[in-house]
Image (cartoon, rainbow, N blue to C red):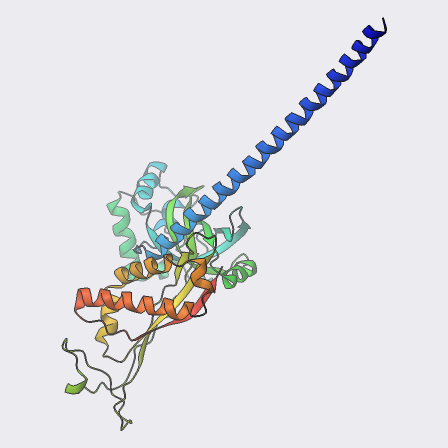
Amino acid sequence: MIIEIIICKTNKYLIKLLELLKVFFYSILIILILSSCKKIEKEIEKSQQELFLEKINALENSLTSDIDASILCPIFRLGSDNTDLQRERVVKEIKEKTVIWELQVYEVKSTAKSNVYRIQTSECTPKSESKTVNQLDEMGEEFLKAFKNELGLNSGGNNITNRNVATFIELFAKNEDDIRKINSLKTGDWIKVRGKITGTSFRSIELNPAIFWNIQKTSNQEGQINKNVNNTTDSGFSKNSKNESKNNRFENTYLQIDKEFFTKIKDSNRAMVVQIALMTQYDNRVFDNVKKHEFVIRSEISNVMRQTTEADISHPDFRANLASKIKDVINNNLKKYEDFGGIEDVFFTSFVMQ
């Protein structure tokens, strides 16, 4: 009898112990599953971020279309007499095109992506109260009619008061200045962006991705170029002598490349945004050749920058070494296509690590 009682109590304790072990096991299993999910989410987020950075880099190096926001406004605005079928045809024509537009802000929101903001811009809102469609230049009117005639659209919408189509913009802030600018935006402010057209949403053009675009044009170098046979290369390029100098010294001329370079650091979540200026002592044909082969040169510079690692960044001579590599790759391409390089130094007028 006593043995039976002991066995019964033992069985009860064993059952409770098994239940506790079962709960413990399931708790551990749930923790492991949640931990794995978090790791997967981080990997997905990292992959998405890398993909987005690649899109930004491709955006900066893509050819720009001359599509004007004013052309699309009469077609996509609310109350337009164009049909959805006609709008679909237009979207097919403009999709995946890169554009530079100046637009009026309506709303700004943050997104789940790091440094990415969603900006909604106003539809057909005048930049100045006195500006109407009747005051558009003749070239703009003819271009609008030609575009619409080509797509088989009518010429409705002449009573609108501005040229801008409404947009939704996925804007990437490349640096702290961009973030400050976005945070200070108010309804009615104007922004200039470079973005890729990906489609439409609620009669608005989707630009995704997009970046701020504020080109500072480099003024032409002035001054007399003294051609001296002793200062001329075999390819016919001559150095610019300083008139006031009695010594054999030459004049430096500079060219700032308008567009910034943005690239992700290799095997890292960090990114680098730089703006580059070039120096030569040769005549202006060197810079003419740089502009002539700009797309090739930008591509090669981006390739050099993409090889940058965290170890490179920590080196005390990192910027000087990077500038030297960029100079070499520019000269190599100029020699390849024009039989002469001529770039003697590279400077970073802006250098931001994120």
